[in-house]
Image 1: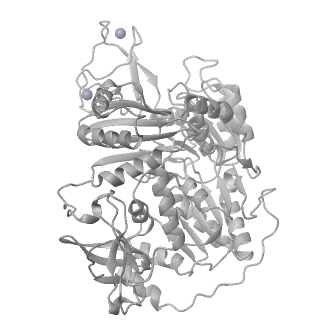
Image 2: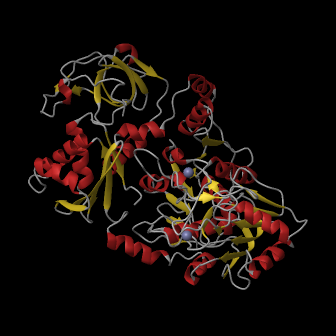
Length: 638
Ligand SMILES: [Zn+2]
Ligand SMILES: [Zn+2]
């Protein structure tokens, strides 16, 4: 939202008043082009009408990018449809058509539905779905002839029992090490049945894994890769390959969920990974997008645990999964780093292969406390936790570098309260002399040594014989409703790389160890019920609204006007905005907050189920108010 970029011209079309619709006479058939413009403003989100000149009559088909004059600016947009009528009093001609159609009717429809559901503009959806045009890539694809594909035989029976690809089914498949093999098998089965396949994974590392597995099984089969990290030319070429049917398999990261492919089989891997949710409007999760596209298709969710949905998923288990046991971290020798069970697990694992050790935090000693009173040691200059970054260095602040500290109790003696991955590596190297230990900090940084220490998210994606998860229960006490789901997800990332045995150490309740061992999602049930009882997503709708106080107030005033007397009058709204806490706004709709920061205020609107009118009211209000610098985040993570 950059007000300085340009101003929307005041034009009669922005007035909410009813306007006369007229039929336009022209030698061109359907001379009106309705265009969704690429403006920096989300609101109002409406089609703008332009006149199709004779010379563009053929090229200006629905789905193409067009260039238009808008006020003093030249903008691009997507041609939604052609027609004969308009309510605009004067029409400007389309200035140009940029290439082949890139938006399918399905994507326009999806943009409509997401805009209505998450209160965003349709262009917010299209911007993420269609990469910027690249003329050379377009030329290269257009020059290719008709695609021809190898005949694909149906595969051998499924490696996982009950893997059902019938249209309309949705399955949760916690397949562990077998995920990529099962993804490739499913792709073959779909191609053999005449369907295209769309696969969405969290990062480029998983793209590589999936591509390798598919290419092993289907050598020479073209795969369109929709990845944010590639060059604009490559990205556009692959996008057009999918759009023009030159690849029957489309694979990529989050934006690939919108890929222009009519796929009978949709696959999402690791759906609960943070990378699977938009960081900006429309704030959709990839699996939600696939589910919205999924009617009449099959959806496979290779995830454990799953994201919480209103309905309990059907599950297929199978594939490689290790045995799981648990041990108390400090049982036995209180001064030792690891319980004897951990040494035993590592030793046994090393007999057949490498071992992964998961440490929750990086660094050497990432947290310290007062030796005498146990109070957590934080920097007296800036409040950051003190840490010992490397062996032999004094405790210091990682933010400002200060190393002076004295506890309120008078003591200046510190003790370690957490062990970082470097410290774990050091102690394991001492315990297993000559074996080779290395700690890795990112998934891209693999190690060939037999014992690999990894922080969460940095687990190398290959097979280990055994795994030890240190301080596994360390974050279970956090206030997050989903702490248990996040913890089991973290452990499952390790377990999915291990063939034989995973040991959980440190404060893991038996039912969660059992959940990991059996890949059962029963443990989620109480959390789902809790979310429902507390009125959290996905059971109730929430919208976070941020902006300058005056804008947020104007928006609330507009909503109140639409709710016709149910909501407080405008002077009451100013009071609501200083109230804080939780207040009734209208029947079934609450205001939570606001909280204030340097950029303005943020408040939440919470609508009780089963009413689903808030999204519609919010969107209609924004349409009326027009250009406005407020940010609307649907279903924020709370
Ligand atoms: Zn103290
Ligand atoms: Zn500091």
